[in-house]
Image (cartoon, rainbow, N blue to C red; front, side):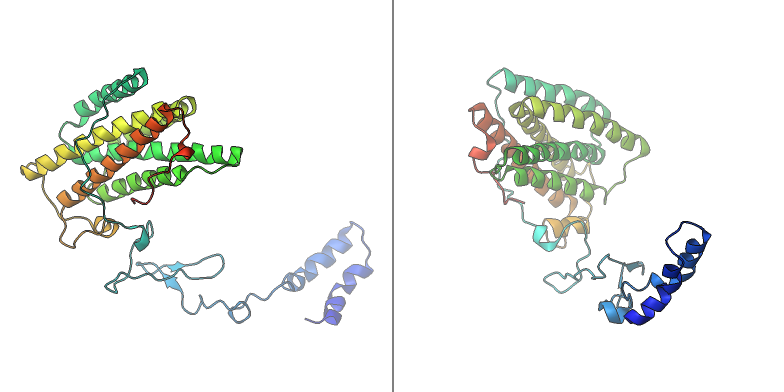
Length: 314
């Protein structure tokens, strides 16, 4: 629209003055449908948006729209098949180091260590009484708790880094990687079994209590918090060892591995549940060592940023 035509459109409004009566309101409202489209042309030819011509659709046929009108990149596997996961990408997958020592135990040597150790042992009692040999349910509850420490620690280190205008030595990334890895454990298990309503209620309550308790413990004493997590991970390794033993003994069905596990851990296509539990146990052993290492650094009177974080495992 030219400047002359714009002026002709606005002339009745301008000539009526800038009063607040019904006259100007009427003029503005009557000319609004014309004026409101003067700012831009939203047609596909003007914006260069080809999404309307070739829309991206979900598996059930629904169109995916994006703010900028840019369709997401289509990712394929090495064999040329489509990548089906949005929660992680091919470059996020990895092959775990299953050679890690799963029998390692940090012997408590001072009051803080003993407090952390017996705290975990005390918390273990009601869990064992409730789940007993129900490994799948136990694993799902375990992962909802195990994913909390890395997120809390990474968040608090992130805020500390911002406050002090300093680097974290890679520890923010290491702890957030740990939290994401634990969450992927949970995403794998829910492909195999769905929790019942009362198990969801337990998770809701336990996560709320544990998050706040761990947050306070990390603020008060990060070395205690990391030691507690180290002992929690030791118990996770022991739990998955019992899970493996029951699978080997035929007490638990060794079902095929879910597709998400095969892609995330780069497992063979014929992988089974035992293969999944085996690599998850290796992950937990790695988290055990990271947190005991973090606690040891701080027991030496140093900050985490002074020692390189063990990143790159996941």
